[in-house]
Length: 471
Image (cartoon, rainbow, N blue to C red; front, side, top):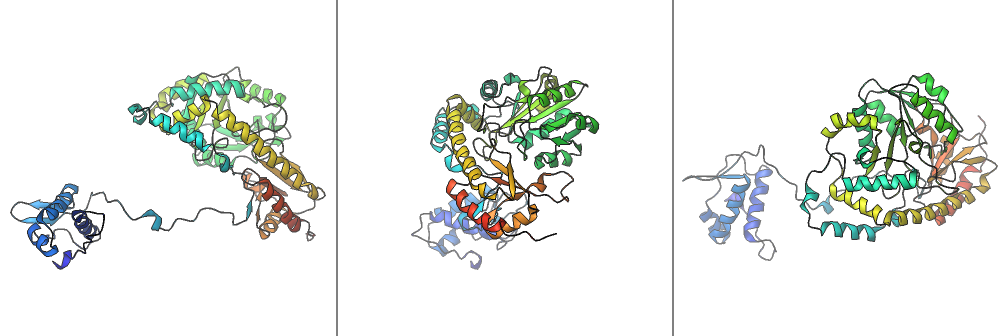
């Protein structure tokens, strides 16, 4: 019995049979009771532990049913070989050490990836979630349409028509868990042999994804209007990746003339497309919203991708791809093999969040919040006007500071960090040109309050207005 010395706690809420079962299971999984070891009979163990035989019978039956122990007629109970047995770690997760999360280590963090989660419409989200789950509809838990829920696709089609000027039917929309998945899906639809042209600097994650999938990626030069079409032509690319409503990270808004030139380029040869990433077009603080490039497309040359990560929350992994009709046949052949990566419940939740007006109210609120922070940051930068210029304002949730006094971004970032202020260099967004010295840093203001902006600006004054050593 020395192998089964079990300390039973009669005051515990756990039944005695369950305590016996847990002890024997733990001994088996940790190697204390090896394969083939015979367990004491239920009668002997009951006598030893001074419990009823029924209690031990229940514990043994549970172990047998889960495959930890086998009952051999007229011989007794023996430990089974554990190969193929699923064992769940039941350790209290609160007692485990939580992995370190990425952190700037700064008191004031102007991360360009930030989102204000304090303004998240939790009550509305909770209300809609409860309503959907109360509908008692088992279809929510079945595998849905690979393209996404029809209800959500109809809602997005209506939203795009009203807010972005994009005319597309729900049959052209594909729902996916984030832009990364949809970009990979698009690569499947387009097939091999394509050449992507991207701006530099650009959204690095998209570049790394295309490059990681062994596509040829070339850079087209930019000017104050965005991607230059003459440079794009020289790359020999058949796919141009652009962010015309608010280029990331430079913040350029592509004018109509350049948009028309891009559409003419796409129409110039068969198989050419423009991939429009409309990641944060909802946040514009001066003038009317800029219509999407896809809204001007009449020849089916623009592939449009949008997301709710910036406008609602990063964890809401719901994005959408609008395919031109010329790519729908490829989707039917290749794309439908891939199941939807967003749960049906989440899709219906987003649909009703848009349909019932919560999204519009949330956007209006966030525009006001972000505009106040945008204006506060511009005001806070006025004392720096002798050493830097500001660009990328009036849209999005970040600004660019361009130093005019010879200070490099590396020096600016280092000095700011010494004052516990996190700012970020522009060079990380360049393709193949990072080695060149640059004088620009990015300040995101989405998750920094107005008071924090004022306090951080005082620290940056101390950091940046000291004399810069000569090179």
